[in-house]
Length: 292
Ligand code: SPV
Ligand code: MG
Image (cartoon, rainbow, N blue to C red; front, side):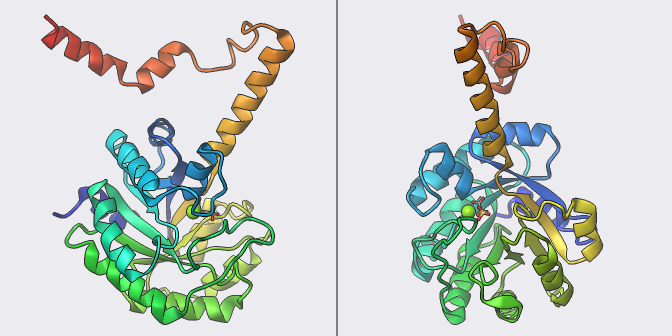
């Protein structure tokens, strides 16, 4: 069955005015991102791993990631872009897992061309080994076949720049992945300046839209990305969990130092705000109608 959120995401991939997805690691953080007006949720493997206090290196199971996508997709109306890492194996694994992510409500899956188990792209000195191009083309084709008529976007992510293999390799992989059926190509970089990404975007054929995750080069803002005319989606990769870590750290520190919870009262969300995020008003309605 065609998924309306996949169709909405597809329509939002405007290379002159890219859609922006905010990372989330829970239904609550997804709701906050939706409330802030982001066009999509990035179901980040990094964020979910961090939430469980483990490295982003396929320590969590596919099932844990899948259930988090399901829980988030159930609580927001905007599209959820699922990070499926390397696809948890080969093309056979991909063929089984894509329908599960579609059924969980994913509007898109993003799969990267590294070996399983993966390592975080952002980790200094990380293990970044790429699978052969033909093997990854098979995984993309498997994903496209397995999505059926859902319209779920298949985003191929190349880690060629992350692995230090250069622009020519990254471009060749991007083209090969579009050839295999990818709806968009995510090009990742961890350079501290946007030069590498800007150069890639300028050289890109434009065959399919690009997706960027500008964590390492935040200087490249949405307007500058739009001006490149090649990028359909910008992903804020980890800003929900980092914001949560900062907020909890400072609140906990202050309560400890002041030996009282009074000081933080005006700084943290009220209980009523949390009630609202929990859908309390809707439950009151159900109570009125059905509790006898
Ligand atoms: C994630 O957020 O899980 C990503 C982006 O895949 S990154 O952490 O930059 O690899
Ligand atoms: Mg990830």
